[in-house]
Image (cartoon, rainbow, N blue to C red):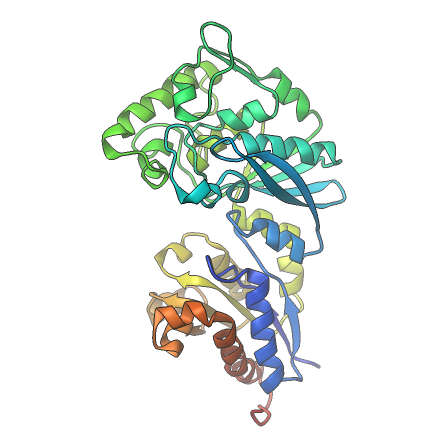
Length: 381
């Protein structure tokens, strides 16, 4: 029987998409182990790269122009197959969508995400998988709600402005238009964050600094979110739920719309068919830009390794850099690991020559996979 290797890496953030990582490894494998059958499954865990993973699994690209995080028109895309759409907050209103990378802690909005959700529904989607993570805004999803048609008003009846600054003036809310826009639509909030909306573990305290909220303003930002929650969630049904604090509180906004919270890795893996492919594999290779302590907290590569280990499959991992020691890797179910920085001699070269280095790793990986599956290794080419 032909030995089969499953390539299931996440992106190398900032340098290579997961699909590019797969392609580079595959090129190397075919040079030293052409008899291996290679299955490709780029993965993601709900953050940036989620749309790319869906596209690699056969979804189709759809496009719309939406409101960017600071109000500018922004081209955006989602992935759709039949009536299932995969959307990504990071690409639409995320930190890297900020013009010039300049943070806007008081005024950044999630409106574009709501507009993109509405575009997907208009295109026939009846299930929306929304990957959270990397938001530029701490608006509790208020902009998203407005993008779906909700009315969030000041005391004089006008619509509030964007971001935290807008939430400061919130006096009344009517979510019925947004709920109507999602009638008969299932919304899944995909993320691995368990933070509530408010308090020391909430959206402002934990994630506000990365969005530019100064330490001296965290308490005021939390108070703004608390006041808004009293209006948006008067029965206190959603603000304290795990995941409400995700993406600057966008998790809270989605919960108000009846969204189901799912592990980002679980939701994406189900869409791209990871388990079925694991059932065909004899050896598995995963990875991401950096294998570190965060990897072990439910991120995609750790989940691939866990599922592979349950099936008794040998697992290899590839990364730009690895800070986990041998015991940690073994505990995660990873028997062999390659890092590009060590191979390149510098992190700069690892970044600049990632694809070439991954192809080199693929050559070694092919030989390892043959040994791990009990097959003789061919002569190196």
